[in-house]
Length: 278
Length: 327
Image (cartoon, rainbow over all chains, first blue to last red; front, side):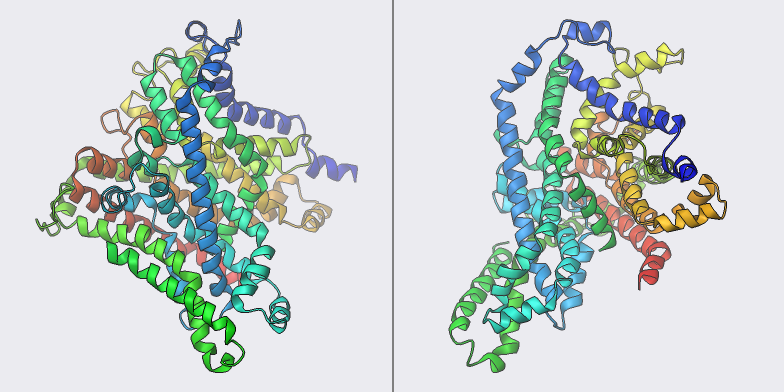
């Protein structure tokens, strides 16, 4: 037993060394940003690798008292929430008949969503820009970004949800039908609550994608409606001389995403695997 | 445009009304109306999703294809029909063909570098070492950061002369490029690739680790009783059983590499001297900066066709095996 643990289970010093190296390389840039935010530009210029000495808090307090930062955060949050709600509701509604009804057009209809996976947003980005800003007049609005993002999140949502809904036991439906529930009632009162774990997974995926999105917001949003990634990018070009300020701004912009996504880590991974196996 | 939006809206209200009426008389015409009723239900369920897809996915893709056939500057009616001229111009434009080459370099470099590295790390970390849970979380950090945010930090790290990376490199006695890593045409794409590897290696490691969890312990034990070394177990058992996960990761990685934009836009903007352009940076600068919509449309269609052909070829040649085994 002891031999097994040594040969296969626990690692020797080499494994720990590799692990340490991985941690250093992975977290290095993030820590550089976070610590750099606590230094002054003079400190950064003197020694880029040094620790804060003395610790400077003004970079961070400047960001937190900057109304633009809070506006970007609000915009990012609102757009990500709308995207998530629309994608999850429309997605589970579409996945339900595809999973539980028998009808002729079922597989062709499902194929529409599968093929949707192959249309990257980048292909449609210029016409999308014209459609949203000129035809729909929704440039510089939350909805103008959230609705196209939800549409592009739908294929993966439906592809993950369909097998999940298909696996729900048929007996539950039969029992509900005997109790007089219609198909629509079954959907809301049985299918949706039972598939909550899968809904959370696809919801987190849609939220992450929207929160991190750059290309579509870059084309559609100006001024007051910009999201955090746009704000970070603009801030870093606008105040490129103020390295410490840029690092503080970037670090704070990371925090909400890090907290949320690390808490949801398992969901994101299982969602990605689901997308893969779907 | 109004017709497209109005039509699905009308159907969904129609379906909703019928449903309301149907509830009362459900019992009497259950048999007779069953088929019709089911159709209405299906329509009610799929309409919102299909309407969104039609308006924001299919119509813009169609519109990109149409745009590619005209000389159009973004305003007025599309009347100046150009046939395939835009395609000829795009395919003869060295900036675009170079961009395609850059995309493929990233596609192949990702597979050649990130796959073995990710696999090695996953196998190493798949042991009962202390702090394994923490390690997984750490590996995941770069992946959850927005590409833009990671890009801005790396942009600071890579600043010529003052940036931390040059200080480290010259600190260990290696030569530093005069224009900085991002400013030297020969090094810029490789530098972007290093940053992308930092950002996305964690996803590969996590997916492979999750795949390794599916390898039953008994196999390890059996192999070990037969006297197999750790290395033999990994090579003969773990990696073959991981094959479906690996194939899927390769697919995801290829599609992602073809659509590369955010990181390049932040780090280099496609420069220096177009050394890091990608198909998407090309079509964005053609479309938004120069209002050359016909050219941008043609580039979009080429990007789509390349992605589609690659996905199809991979599906037929590689992924098909998985579906067969599963079935």
